[in-house]
Image 1 (cartoon, one colour):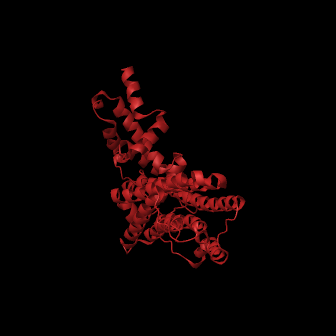
Image 2 (cartoon, helix red, strand yellow; image 1 turned 60 degrees about the horizontal axis):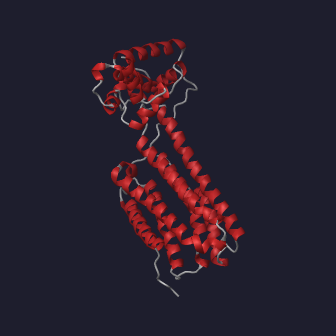
Image 3 (cartoon, one colour; image 1 turned 60 degrees about the vertical axis):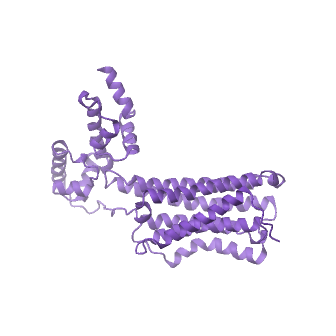
Length: 364
């Protein structure tokens, strides 16, 4: 019989269910013309809601342990999140029949539970099944992470500023999901004799972490709507194989490039792309990319930011610029992300911009 006695964890679960379903509906209904990737994200948040609803119904005695579908949800999280990342980063991606194979393990476990009841009969079976589900989830999360890494490298070959906000959103989401899944999986290592003692506290912590993830997604979606409305479209890959760039052409492009960087300083444009720079020089972006890679030994991102850091160093050392804040200098030299500026500056100069300015003030 249902007991309808709500613990703190159950109340948090109710909030998660409400927020997840609300977020799911919001994602599903917005921007109908372009939301294939958001439809998948809505499926991900719906899984959160259904998972906690399933737990809540069991806790209230409405369902018994034979209807605990935690393993099924666990086997769905990884593929759904991977496909979200894939659709977000691949404009031409269409869901194909073979893609449904990724969901076969979840379908298989669902059928077993419906036919035989709960698959967890002992501590050993709980431990083994948890390890298998965790391995399955982290396999897909690692695939999603590798997609982001390859996209980031591709952006660095074409843009002087990568789309750090949306890449950071994806990385943060992957890390958050990885943490909560790993934390939830630790339950398998708690002996059943201590489950009654720590079970409620443990579930409350899992619920709190889950609530934080849902609120993080909702907050970021409100703060930066472009995260949930636009794809991370990678530029087309341009290969050098078959290129007709001879040594004389390469030297001429290099001469034009060096003169342009010194005289016109195009790197001060925070949105500079390799296509824009190629148009300024009157050459193809493919040939320019090849010259920068082969003659300078850098990708476009590193090449442009090399000049920006030199410009920043001049301003940080200059007495006439001593009143400028670091953020003002960052924008003046073409950076728009503080984290990117600090990272690139420290990588090149071995210290932060503040430390660099302080060191040169002491010398003067």
